[in-house]
Length: 92
Image (tube, rainbow, N blue to C red; front, side, top):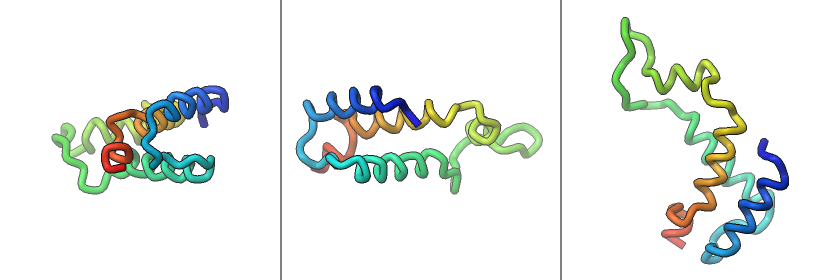
């Protein structure tokens, strides 16, 4: 989980760019992050070249072996959620 101070900085930057569709309550924000994290970790129907000797694709292997730390992924999820190019904002 990202540090509270970092989360608050992200939310402060979001307040400057939001069009009113960004959840203002922590529970709503965490629900959005949970959806993004689930999507990032969903490998159903992955489209990638197969690995050698029938192994899973490299992208899948890296997630399975912990190459990407969960906190780093969550930070990226927050950055995605608060970015101006987020579909949540475009459709808002």
